[in-house]
Length: 112
Length: 460
Image 1 (cartoon, each protein chain N blue to C red):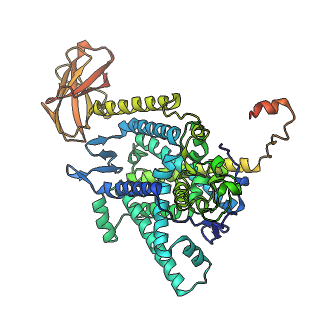
Image 2: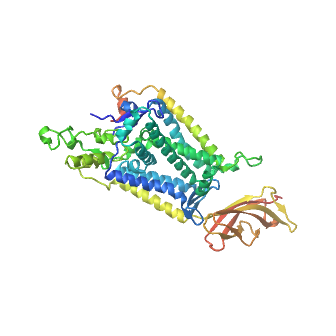
Image 3: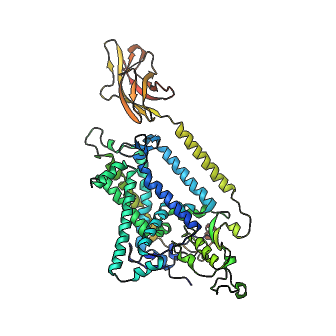
């Protein structure tokens, strides 16, 4: 009824060019993760109190600047992670297909 | 034969191919239109509502307070948000188990905004065939005018969306005034353009590709499916073998099924798939193919429902089950969590206290022989009314609490810091001790909170 298809199986007319896909796969999930990370981080930390203990001036002039810098920092870090993951997935050797599977272990791992 | 549904387009990415969904009217499309108006209506109007002198829904980030009608949430209430997200994902699971990708078809922001951008495109460029013709046509003055008009609408709507988004975080009426005088702050300007731009690119250009390449839900939603999940299906036993025929001809004599192979279901599909190949994960369950097929079936006098909402069991002629272990478990969890959230919010402690030691001196020996410690007691009033608070201390015999009193006034949704001196006769001490400082509202004794602190004394 429902079959997950790899992107290479799409009809050519519906396929996105690789570059566009790669950019989206890197920046979109990291955007989601950065949004969540920003919310959690600044629920506990008030940006105007960072670096303000004994050595003024504070690290951030206003809370809004602190939130924005925090968000973009998280987005950048998460993007780097997404980029590495994508690179490893894209450069991996292709997994053997079902027809290649000769050992029983392979068949056990890939239940139908 | 599949009609050509796409045209190359020099859009965002070099080889991008654009889908021109054919416009269609019908039961499900009316429901989707209503959903678009209701959801976008809420989104664009909500920040303009007022509630007791302030914006009704305001996520006041500079002040670190979230106002939602009568409710004010503080950073300490963060777990409510987490709780709410858990409820949201459980609802998604529940509705997916019941009726497939209802969220995608009717409520997902990507679908809803893509729909409005499609409407604007149709308003300016006309029907599907007119749009495809225009895309192929040379760049005449008329084409430039139409394309410019479309971009004007798209960009304008995107900017309004970005403006509204920022209006949830900064008072929207002030923001509107600043926009009119071109005096918005740097971050306000940035976020309006950022979210406006994201809307423009996502709804104008990327559309179904977001669902196909970027959406994680599209990939795992089938895990919630079972044979009783309502999904959009083509009844192939009834439809096949498909084929064109003359109107009024006997299909049984020609050995044909009910599908006249008009390909209208393919032409209306916003993701460019053919539902007759079975359920595919590109399908966002918008039901445009159901409306399209029903219209065709009416024309050729066949019964409706060749493409319809049905379950796997229903299609196989077996009994359908709405109530089944999966839906019962999801529904029970959902009810329990929602009831718990409502109870916790209505019964949460709306006052809090923070006791900080004064940093300048550890302790002071007073002429009468007692030892004094100084604290900064921060009283937090999350209630929507002001209260008078009394401060008391426990933990050491003969402990005296001295502050500007007898009561401290704290306004609604405010924090008040109070310098508090605590004195203890020296002979009742040895080194130091843990004490507790408590606050209590005078008008409502049930509003009270306590905080621990260290009392320091000379160790001789």
